Image 1 (cartoon, one colour):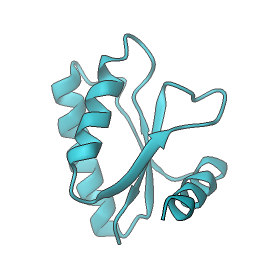
Image 2 (cartoon, rainbow, N blue to C red):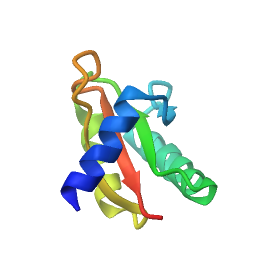
Image 3 (cartoon, one colour):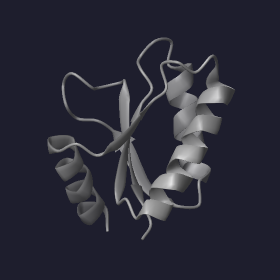
Length: 97
């Protein structure tokens, strides 16, 4: 399972997955709310993986996003990006099908 989702995320890192940029969110609560709606829409569209741009900053947004991804019923796996320019600022999430 982990190898399968890692392959999916690796492919997304090399391509252009559906993404959301949360830099405009005024706080973690607003970012999590936007993310929840985004994931629900992506799931309905049949997306396999999504890219979440939360930025580096203080790390509060990243922590809140990771907590929300842990609890979201359609997210089966997530991890930080391994691309050097995205490390710490981008998370990829694999959605159930």
